[in-house]
Amino acid sequence: MSSNDTAAPAPTTDGELPEEFLVLANALLAAAKVGSASDVAALLKQGAPAWYQDDSLGWSALFYAAERREPALIGALLRGGAVWNAVDHWGRTAGEVCLSLGDQQGWEMIRNEGVRTEMLHHALGASQQAETEGGITLRAEDKTSAGDNLEFLRSELTWDLGEDGRERVLDADGNGVMMGWEEPLMKEHVRLMTDHPSAVAKGGEGMAILNVGYGLGIVDRLFQETKPVQHTIIEAHPQVLKHMREQGVDKIPGVTILEGRWQDWVLDPEKLVTLLEGTPGGMGFDAIFVDTFAEGYEDLKAFFEALPDVLEAENGIFSFWNGLGATNPTIYAVSSSLAELHLDDVGLDTVWHDVAIPQSLAEEVWRGVRRRYWELPGYRLPISKMRLI
Image (cartoon, rainbow, N blue to C red; front, side, top):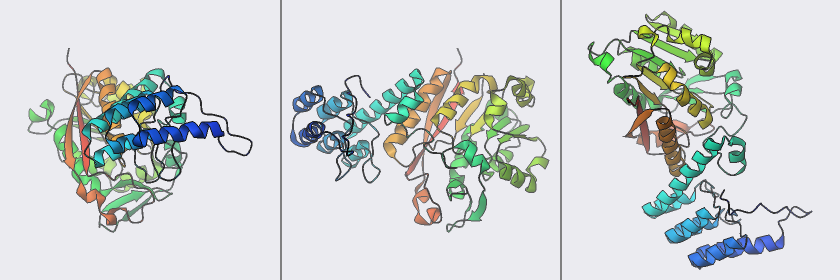
């Protein structure tokens, strides 16, 4: 929220908002629909709440400004405290209104505000503040197994085939943990990550690879096809560990399975030594891939900050499953931009590769799954390398 924002009014004894507050709120909505930027600015100066959403559509003034394709209105509302990622009754943000109308300028204004707001929250270490002010979409949001990693590790998992004929893993709540439709994306991750001097010099072999999160084992099977010299897998879920052993993953030459969360191994100085033992000279992995479940952006950012300790400095390649906010294009764009900025902070340059995934939208993929984790037609695949000084 901006410094111009006023605190939300206390409800009356019967739970209703004060009449004077509602008058200002509705006046701002009306101004956003048909008024000028100066009308909006004047109402904001009087204390009109830019965050207020109507009952009919769940739209705030920012949505109506987006519908009008008025950048001056959008800018005034964002400066006045409009919440960039507020969603309406259909789960859309004002950014999606801009996209639906082909308004690239308006969408970029909202996206940039999202990046600015999220960067400010992280710079201040204000995760609790963010959760109360609307910046919740880049984090685990609940205490179910889909929103809390520790709860997920206690949950019962099931392996089955979806109606699309692909294998999938579901948690106890019926949420998709990993699904077979992701394989083409994993192939592209592996292809781009193994374009590495250590591999090229040996005909595609010889890399030291770290994967965090086994899932269905798709990416690990693909990594194995490159014949790495060392292949380390960090996995914490007891059922997944059992499944891996039943598949004989622990018997594959060069494979090391480390039980526990990545935080246990990467952030503990003593265990970090063990983690690095399999890398050339103990200097770090040639390629690192991260794909965890029920972790939010704060967890991913913490892994970014640990990368200089585990990634080979000269030629190491890092990538991650870029799935945060992947049910909403504006939030997905903000989370991707935020990741790039935070990777830059720790010395990594990131190149994005756009991959089309229309098959992920097929209805049969999601039958029997409680919560979709993907609804976008494209995937932004990150490849990051240490920046040499």
